[in-house]
Image (cartoon, rainbow, N blue to C red; front, side, top):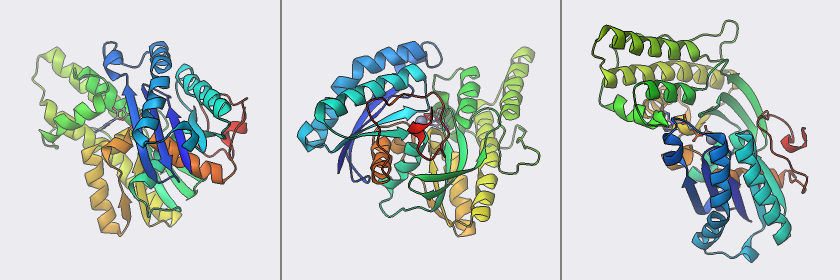
Amino acid sequence: MNILAFESSCDETAAAVVRDGREILSDCIASQVDIHRIYGGVVPEIASRKHIEAIYALSDEALRRAGLTREDLDAIAVTYAPGLIGAVLVGVNFAKAAALALGLPLIPVHHIRGHIAANYLAYPELEPPFLCLVVSGGHSLIVDVQNYTGFKIMGTTRDDAAGECFDKVARVLGMPYPGGAALDKAAKEGSAGKYKLPVGHVNGSELDMSFSGLKTAALNLIHNAEQKGEALDIPGLCADFSAAVSRTLVPRTMEALRLAGRDKLAIAGGVAANSRIRCDFETACQESGIALYAPPLSLCGDNGAMIGAQAYYEYLAGHTAGQDLNAYATMPLDAAEGYMIR
Ligand code: KG4
Ligand code: ZN
């Protein structure tokens, strides 16, 4: 089954063709990062307008690179939630038009389910059940993936998402948006241990996370040094900050694996590209006899292929939509048939 999938929930316009949920025939991304960098973050209206400009050419490009024509397609898929609402609407409307024009089924895909499904593309042998840590610019979730369309959230952040904190600290350090990757790169030049940074705890919810205290502590440390004219060891601070985020994520995820009785861990989302976090999970999983699935960096960030992968399983579960499909800024990951929820 060949699915043409669209993703436009934030600042990447993406179109991909995926076969049977597992094989990437093409994966095209038009990144807007250079434009938003001028403003230090994503400007929603600009994002929507750039999606409108790019999406038609990108869908043609995805078909061309897949070596297919429109007649070879079996379904159209699209991210319909969650995300910047104006941005998501562009993809949803385009996908609806494509499905209508080609007479094909329309498959709505939850963005975070897509991130999890990136693992199906990287690891053909991976099948639910497994545990997944999803860490992106907007989400930090420990999810029990019970089957392809059945999810149980075991832990979540009570305040900021992990990626938000990486971006904020990187921005104050003068790194270009989105700062997570730049901070990661700087951390590799330094060594951890110089700066003491706190790890947040949520009383009574051992699997929930809190990053705002860590973010504030890092920002205060930077501002205090600036005010006193003290030199900062920036690579060292980046290493300590990455280690502190990892100290929040790794123990909670390992505990969730134990509680859920799973022996497979997948990681997903832009922050799953972080080298310190990947390394710490490799060590922890090795020690605990857990099989770790960490997709290549190209599949961690937003892309269209992950939407095409999840779409296949949503289709098999009967989750298709009509021309009244709407877009949603927020949507629970574990909603049984998400698009029905208004
Ligand atoms: O999943 P994603 O591409 O988009 C969202 O759905 O949010 O995640 C983007 C986030 C940004 O906050 C970005 O700074 C962060 O992922 N990120 C990283 C790294 N690469 C991307 N954070 C830490 N280390 C990295 N290597
Ligand atoms: Zn994402």
